[in-house]
Image 1 (cartoon, helix red, strand yellow):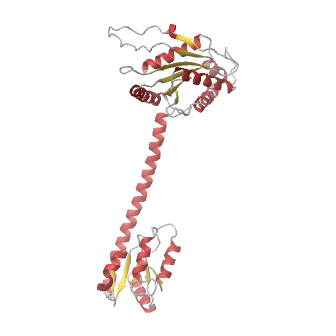
Image 2 (spheres, rainbow, N blue to C red):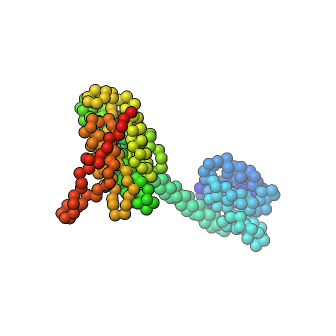
Image 3 (cartoon, rainbow, N blue to C red):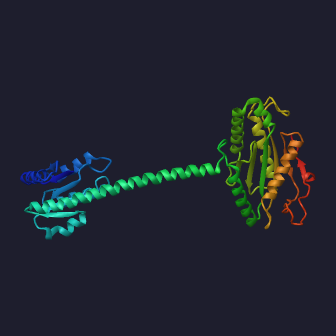
Length: 353
């Protein structure tokens, strides 16, 4: 336990030091002025709580007296928790001012040995309690930061696909339903682009799964690089399947985006020796767009985009197909209502230049 005695009188400093050492205080320091004491405290702990546990300062020093020294200590974050006791000739005269400055207690002069020990023990106990609270606060802060990082990691893992780093299917479905609801309220279009990597099974079989995973990551990055508007989302929907959500976008705009995506992936120049349509990796895309109506669901839009990408693959792959008919809600099994209409005749090819 370290005590710093601050007094102009050398006799006072020596007497108090002898008393404290006699009562078991092993680290008793002295300073002959408030300025010297403050400089020592700052040098002892420039970036953390000082190694001094209690300051015992004379209120009657010239210059920086004990009360003003206490005020300076309490104004500094790194020293704020050090208890300060004041030695006073007439406690009644400046006691209010002393407590306003942050003094924790006082000792009347001439000094009574028993009174000094009792008040010093109280100050030491106060410092121990404050140190304990500070330690618990730091531990709590560390734990809070760890929990925050853990929650951020868990959130990231819950919404992102681990392999490609883009949105996963679960998160995409949440965003799609949110956007569908918003588009319904605002009566604006929403579009989807379903994407399938051409002959990806052959790619995996020939190049191996590690290279296949790398290919998926490169394709995902290329798709993601071209969809940066707020509300646009690229997600991995299945093994080699991706889906793009385009908010506030009609059919023509979605078709243009799809063709840009097709060209972007082809331009990556990823060798594909087992593709039947190109010597590079390519994609087939299906586009569907609608202005949602109340009572309808986003599943119909997904169904339409999925049918369109199927037609793109049937037509030879590495191309865009657009679903241009009205969306058809799929009736629940056993409801007695008509099932989904055949959609193949509503699929139109995109003219390639």
